[in-house]
Image 1: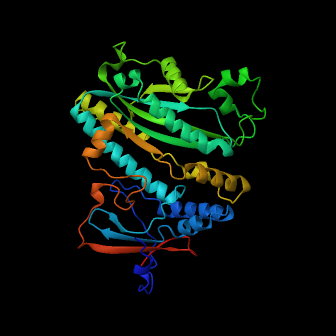
Image 2 (image 1 turned 120 degrees about the horizontal axis):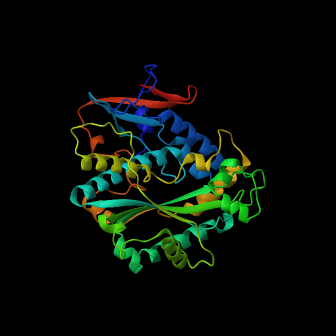
Image 3 (image 1 turned 30 degrees about the horizontal axis):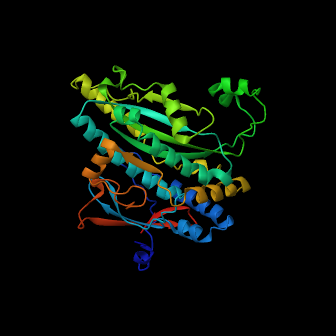
Length: 367
């Protein structure tokens, strides 16, 4: 629902700047996301994508909250749902994180499982071939998920496509240290021209749910070399792609409450780690570099908008898909971006707070 009309009768603002905090006290960055959306909209306009630019520029212009004793709860707004909109992708990311939290909690409550993080890549591609490459990757993953080894070992998965652009004109020390064997093989060193500069790197991040016996039984365990072979076969490649698989490691910053049982503490920490790898894959900093309009950013917008249109960037399979359906979690990509979690649903009778974007102040002002 576009709610600009709901503020037309408002006369004067209170002069207060919107402060929206989570129950833990962390401030929600509405201002920052709105500014990034407007910057992205400017790039869209210059790229000739006028209609999407106009929608994005008006995205979340007005926010209507219900005020509860604990916090503000977003009740009404209008989101443009343009695939590359930073505001919408922030909301999508929150929703996916909530969905995956509920799914992981449900799985861990019902079964003893382990979690793996799998990264599947292909060679970098140019903008002209990007859309076709991504389509091939979706087909390849579909083939991979039907292989006997996958079906035997994997109880369920969450898959997210991410596309980044290589923006380093020269090989930095950080890049070199991350993959020295590759650069040595190519005869390149720190400071050399980067052969992948300006190309796009589509890849899958996959969260895998496996049985606890995965690492103990030969008929379950899939080595990294075997994952590479399977992905190469699924993609019908004439080269060995870069594939990485690792255990999801629990975050260690959870408070050590002695009354928790060890297994319970491990499960909670593991769930926190799972959320780290299940965020929405389109990051505005991958689309727009810096805070200025540049030709490079305009090129990136054109390429990513064309390549990602009408494609679903996330997907569930197996046990995780079943639980997603059972919990009736809805569509995080194209669905409601107002109610992120069940905690967001509040009674109609509580006091409303309306905040409207003020172009001059470049912030949300409470009315």
